[in-house]
View 1 (tube, rainbow, N blue to C red):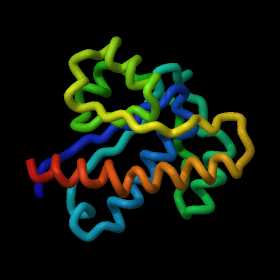
View 2: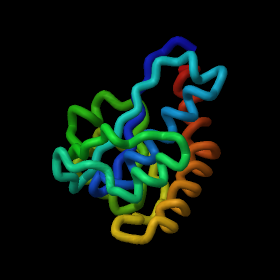
View 3: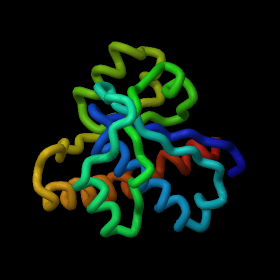
Length: 152
């Protein structure tokens, strides 16, 4: 397992779900004895992101409760350049997946779609539920894909 991998999470605004998922995956990779030795770049982007916006306050709060910081996160729009570098693209809902399919058809073979409801502008409890869903999907679907990609 010596291959360098890039994983990109994509949501709409790049303020909640995708930065949370990216930060959580980075944390999981560091804690995993096997995967922690891999060189994995994890990034996030948004199909409707406004460049430079910070992660939403509730996303930062929930991640902080988990011992993970989003303080340095700034939103960035999805681009062909970002997606071309990715070995795995995780669209965080079907609408985002469809936007990627239409706008970047060449990424279809390396894109998976998971359904996570957007917590933007909801109370912090909804963000906690979102983080729990993301964690479950990272463990059950994304980490197995990372392992498979690492093995080539």
